[in-house]
Length: 223
Image 1 (tube, helix red, strand yellow):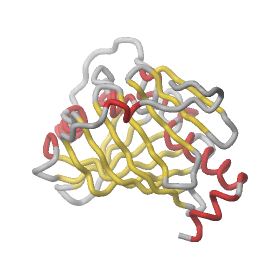
Image 2 (cartoon, rainbow, N blue to C red):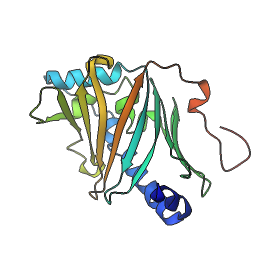
Image 3 (cartoon, helix red, strand yellow):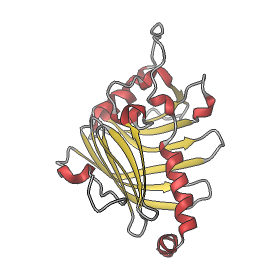
């Protein structure tokens, strides 16, 4: 736990983790931007299963560990409610919060009183949150050698500058759709890698209504 407290006391370390957070959530933009209509192509059944499982989630709460390319780690709790709502609550001492209220994805840095917002429809987390995003059109399977593991790579070959995201799912009868999202790896165009691993997934919880609200550090009011 020493690392946690040293990070909290060192603004430069927090800034680096803010960059890592942006990397983790800023790829791939393709998940939010719909391309012009194209003829439908056959979709691999495992891709269909993975996408169906993601869309079958109503509410999800899980512990997460976020690791940057240097091996530095942050922990916290992820809460999600489809469609459109998510919250990354970081460990005590880390003044960062990422939350979506269903219309906008907001990154709040309480240390410097900074707020950044994106429409949820333009967010890379659209792959998880927006039922209208056709993730299967941009997805390819990575070989895993195991019938109960799906590795799904999402990228837009026309826009390599968007980077990519690889989602790992394990077959689990108790999970919605029979597959459980366990981790994702984001890689930006500068080859900066961020890994987010989930554990202790809980589904179908009644999440409090204030889960997806946030306090605005730029004023005394609340958003």
